[in-house]
Length: 135
Image 1 (cartoon, rainbow, N blue to C red):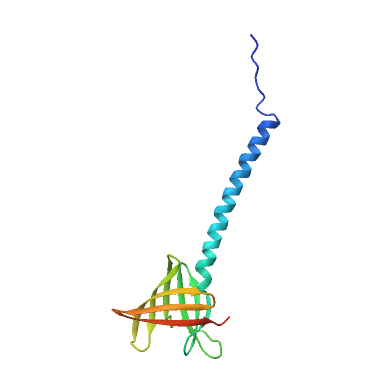
Image 2: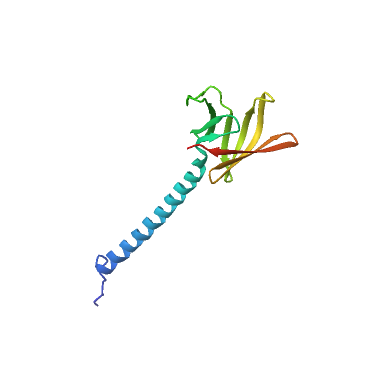
């Protein structure tokens, strides 16, 4: 009895393997690009922002976003951290230091074009601020 054995290493098998590898590579590439796009979105808050009466530089430290004042000469004051934020649900949430109240208040931030929209809350009272990107 003769048994017809198909060669598993023929051209059709190589084509199927390459097709599987191509699909796997495409899926990995999609996942990586989506992740990078989300990371870019998170980091869009990084930069120098003009407030009503000062400039604030926001930078990333680990998974937190920190805001420090900059003087008119461009000198940073890293010991005066006035913003402490985390990125959650396409917004940055955390605390902002208020000189007027001499304490930290809750803040929710959103970037819209070259504007940083801040909703600052102290108990039941909230105030909306708008900063513009300096760089």
